Figure 1 (cartoon, one colour):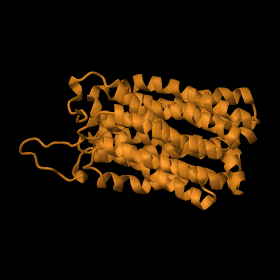
Figure 2 (cartoon, one colour; figure 1 turned 45 degrees about the vertical axis):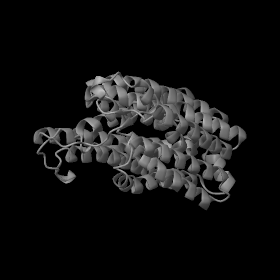
Figure 3 (cartoon, helix red, strand yellow; figure 1 turned 90 degrees about the horizontal axis):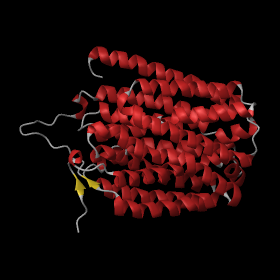
Figure 4 (cartoon, one colour; figure 1 turned 135 degrees about the vertical axis):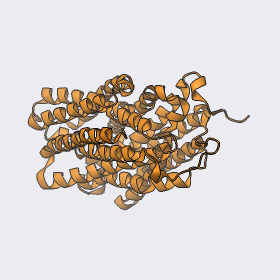
Length: 402
């Protein structure tokens, strides 16, 4: 029996099962990407390398995504979206297994490159998948559901992986992720609806090159904003485990619980984003990241006071938790239908350039100035991103492109 293809989402019931399946796929992908952040000390000790070198594993993964996402998206644009999701999840599992068994740091880097290739194409496809399943007015709700997978990665995936790594070894944590990805791949095959992602021209309509699409300017500006904000976030978050131990004074055994607290707060932020994203796509965006800047500034000022640190982590988690969902919803709103898949690929590139760049900048700051400076660096870069967003909104409004 041929698998059903959704072509007219506006006349169908809200696709809960398909969106939840996407969320689960996103959960394992994001967990795999960020798993090293909770296991930096163990991995550094095992390979006899520095913390910043292990932090570079996040950079390497992200840079691979940056380089590969748009070309792979273009090369595979005529293929089934669902089929691509299945294939890249299998490759992602291979990358995680390769990391688990890598005997040297160099082979671990290769395993992360394999994972990055799969992750980049994965996001280029799933980033816009929800837009094929629901009508425009339900995008915020649908994106909030799929984005819950990323939030769950921080709520459960990274903390549980960190706990497993502390208790049984970091290699077993990666092996566990490989198995979980394969299980989720089976669920994708069974429950994710196929979609028709092709944009059909009206009778007599002449196809124009994407460079002449009116939405390309706001898409490009939003990608710059994403780059700034994700760089800011990952300057600090990549090194959150050693920061909590060395500056916050928490024991290594307490790190998984604090990451769980951060992720749980992010889940609350995601619920808020599901309401805010469609109603206040601009104001909600600005408020969320202003609060992020305030929270990490508090961590910089009062990092040695554990009750303050715990409270600031909660606020930070709530504020940032809904940020990516709001960003993704806004991207799907500003991009035209024929620009959408390219916009999602560029968005994925910007996200991962920020993730990798943030890990790299954070590592440089760590080596030169120490862990203590990282929250302040995030606060400054976040403010720069918010100011750029506000200024670009005014500029676009004057040109009537917003």
